[in-house]
Image (tube, rainbow over all chains, first blue to last red; front, side, top):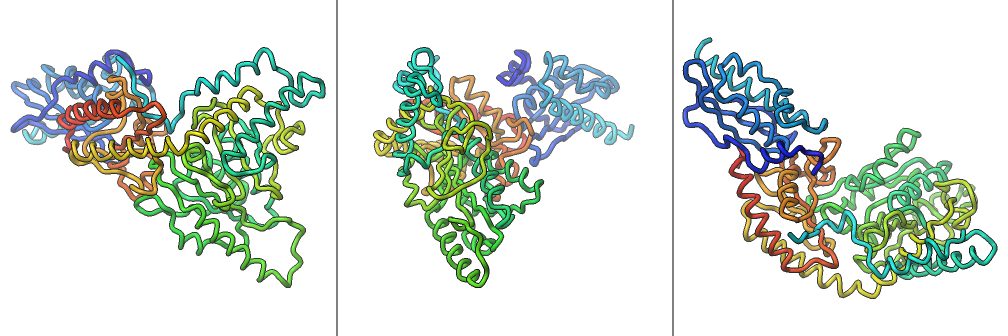
Length: 125
Length: 403
């Protein structure tokens, strides 16, 4: 299947943390309909920790899998730690992503940073 | 789990009868058809028989068939061959925006060599703008190439009508050139080529009725082997060769002939000619059943391409809120093979140029699926596919931020 790793396929067929959060503390969006990938991330923050994170994604298998993986990597981390999560962390955690699909992991990183920055802006930090 | 193949437009399985016909030509009858001795004469006879079989399939004369390595070579041969043969007569070529890459890429190449190319637009169903064609034909036009039917959306072009327009244009040109000394060309320009890779073997074809000068054929699209095809060149027309070297194919295409491939090609042509009417009826029925059932059972689905002027086996849907490659992989997991026009499935990350040419948005192009049916497709396969597709679409729509 297009050189997708087992881990990536697992996250595609069984994504973690799908959904929305009512009254999220931060929302991040990345991608657009033109390029065919749209990611929305919702976070809940308590005592500087990301206690809950959910995502909705329109995109290919790599897009869904990288979204799912980034939510797993982020859950329970502090706000500062979350800002340090990179697209490489996501691709490594998935056991690698085909070169042509790496931009999906970049979108995941962008959406997460946007969600955290949204939270920080709302809380004037 | 049994597998269901619904990607016949990409390629077809070789018919076992075709394989049987090819077999002797690897180890036993292996002579070079250009050899004068009996080994060569034996294979020479075989390829000439195949040539007649292919000619019969399209209503042509045997000597009008030039064997190639496939549809892509036939298209390159037609475009570059016509361009280079006729460059002293003009430098303008007309094609459509929805041609296969095997036409568009040679066009880009020819533009770099100084030729001018006009890309005709199509309407929402994929039919070319006839009035635009009439407007852009000019004295310097040397070639018009319009595909007989499109591989992605199945739309069939009015080739005979286009041929008529070109014929009228040629005649009107001759009248205005009366006072000038006309070079000793035995044929008039522009030439008219059609990429019939998706239609030969699927629609009844008569090159006389179509009115074309050049026509591309590919064997593996109708149960023949991969790696062989042909360019039909109407008698009297001369174009520049694509491959230079030996004198094969009456000096038109050098290279030792792919004897087993050509024999298989001929056999496939003969078989499909016998079965074509039955297959058209069967596939059209299955196609329309599949379209109707999908549109009824899955919400927010649209059919892309002309609903009536359409290949008997082609279905192309855009399914709102979900992306093509994700659906494709999910279907593959369920043992079902089809295709998509989504950017995510192409190595260039660009969505289908055909769907965009219809005026569809990128979003709609990304959510497309193409199913192409074939000889071994059953109603049961289609029912199973729809059931699986419903589950897949539901799952992906729950994850989608826009549905």
